[in-house]
Amino acid sequence: MAIVLDKSQRWRVLGAHVALIVLCLIVIFPFLVILSVSFRPGNFATGSLIPDTISLDHWRYALGLPYQGADGRMVVPELPVLRWLWNSVKVATLSGLITLLLSTTGAYALARMKFSGRKQVLTGLMLMQMFPAVLALVAIYAIFDRLGVAFPAFGIDSHWALLLAYSGGIAMHIWTIKGYYDTIPFEVEEAAKVDGATPWQAFRLVLLPMAVPILVVVFLLSFIGTLIEYPVASILLNTDKQLTLAVGTKKFVAEHNFKWGDFAAVAILSGLPITVVFMLAQKWMIAGLTAGGIKG
Image 1 (spheres, rainbow, N blue to C red):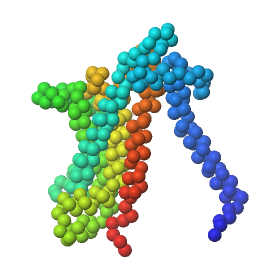
Image 2: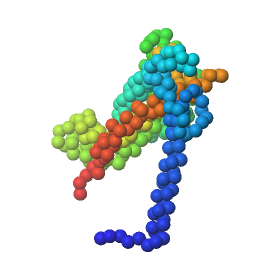
Image 3: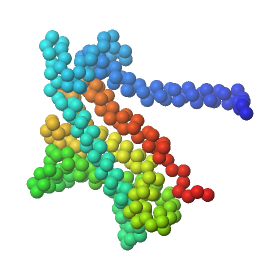
Image 4: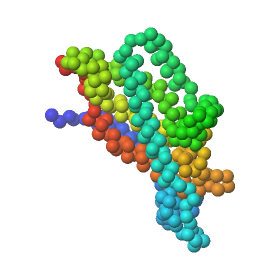
């Protein structure tokens, strides 16, 4: 049956669509500016949104390809942008997997098991979220500086040290996953145990598949947060070959030497891993949704 809208309702729908279009344009405008800067000749931040002349020099620099400079000489990029991008993707992926491993098991213990001090642990995790990691930068540096003496792999200028530091920030993810576990009826696991499943099998084969949506969300949050994180990475990583992209891009904006064009190209390049991860995880976020734990 067709739905007939009166004139006032039609104007409201039209107004809502116009407002959404304007909002989308406002959101996408900064990206268009950065894209425009990346294709302009020279390293200037100001200019028209549509460049008069298209230059690919900034993109060649970001991709590590030599290009011809303004004086006619061949310029070889001195900054390993692609290596920084690989370091960022590697650290972000491993950090997301470690976060999932620790937060899923920790949240299961707090959601399903009864033990003394459980409420205190939950309160402590909630309080830990109130203090940003930047407040502990001095302590983090001192800890890993001393830790590197006994275990060089976890010392300063090591990706393993960075992963260990990031793994300490899972309090929010534990709370998030625990809240999702609480929405899944306990009777589902009880039924699996009646059929002969062990507690580990009930957790791995019953609970985790039903929690796929929140696990994907937690991985995405951890991946994006690690990819764009700067303060902790800036104090734990020193050499160029170990830097992540978030730390390395600072070298494009040095005093009296602002490489805005190169910076814009690298900024767009840094968004590609996040876009790819979102596209790959989209089907899991949709197909993995649970419609409820019990029929009836």
